[in-house]
Image (cartoon, rainbow, N blue to C red; front, side, top):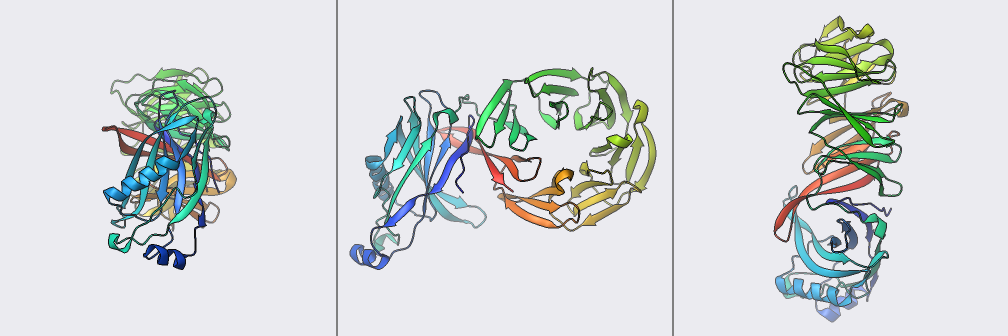
Amino acid sequence: MNKYIILIGFLVISVLSCDLGMVDVMDFEEYGDKMDMEVLDVEFRLYSVVDRYQETNEFDVYIRFDDYLNLNSSQILDLKKNIMDNIQVENASVSAFYYTDIYNSESREYDHSLLKITIIPGGQGNIEITIPEKTIKLSFNKDDYLNRYNKEASETLVIPRDLLYPYSKSGLDISRVCWLSAHEYLVVDTENDKILVIDSDSCSVTRECSISLDDISDMEYSADKNVLYILSSSSLKLTILDVGTLKSSTETLSSTYSPHGKALELDTVHNRIYILTNTYKLYSLDMDDYSVKINSADLPLNINGIALDAEKNLLYTANSKSVYRYSVAGDTVSEETSSPSSSISHVQLVMNGDGSKIYYADSDGLHYINTSDLSESSFEGSGEFHAILPESDLLFTSERSYPNLYLYKYKLSDHSLISTTNLGYIDGYAVNKDGTEALVYEGEYSYSSGIGHWEDYINFEDL
């Protein structure tokens, strides 16, 4: 299914990806006899990678050859000249071509070729790029050790002007992504100090604001208050963003040891924000006036996260020795019970909807803690825990198998694997609230005019 995707700044987004409609000039045998060459089918795809829009800025259109062409310099020049002589562009102009063969590090061989056409926007209407019939030609003889089939192709790529978005040359550094609603996502760009709200239905940035942020250790969104809480990893600072107005404020907790933020939990039942530091201190703040209610209570050493049962005023944590349950009622912290742990790591503790289990993942697989007695159990699965959606009975984990990252979708009630999605080589992602879609982004180091820079691609994946 064709899908429009937006790019934001050097956050590069594919707004259209489609196979070129191709018509055979003649049948394989007839063509081969005429050209004195063997013939094979070659597939092409035309798609756009959009930079940012200011009158003199550029973006790229790609023609992908799904086979590795292995062209010599003369053949590359012929192909570029053929396309340059025939390409049709409206409200833009062509400035450059670049051809490359793509090496697959997993298979350790070249598997496809790419021709990049650089486009300069101009005019006020939508940009249209058309590859006419008989433009893409691969006519090679046996002496070139190539047996490709000459195809006719015609396809027009339309890029709406309002999908081209202005951003600076410095590129983007996407620290975090979270979902706000079924098809709305919030992206934090710490390189340019921006917050972006992206709608996947319209493939557009609907709102944005400027914000000054340090590195982020955790980020939680409260749908009840429509507020995003961002915890710094370089200081004990909490940034509070009103998503409705995109206005922000900052709360800084003072401490003798200058700890950094490690984990964040929200309690909308009792109006509390819980913060765990890298020195294993626990704070809680009032969600209205941000007054400190629990001040640097000591938790066990080497814990990796916290999980909160807000209804029961219970907080859970664990290390390689034990699993712990604390009462936080009345803004006091008191240990209720503990149990020996069977795992070396308890990262990203997340509680299910009814508070009966806490899920986590380590190198040995997927596990959960039964909150009734703090016993631990494992179930067959793979990857690092990512998201739990109790209302949708879904659990997601991710696992990197270089160069790709795979997202696994489990049914929470019986832990059965529903699907596996290959997200490619990505830097991060966020699953929407019903588990049907994910926003994913990928960072890639590339060169333009001899200058290296990072580019970030955003797209949406059906799950």
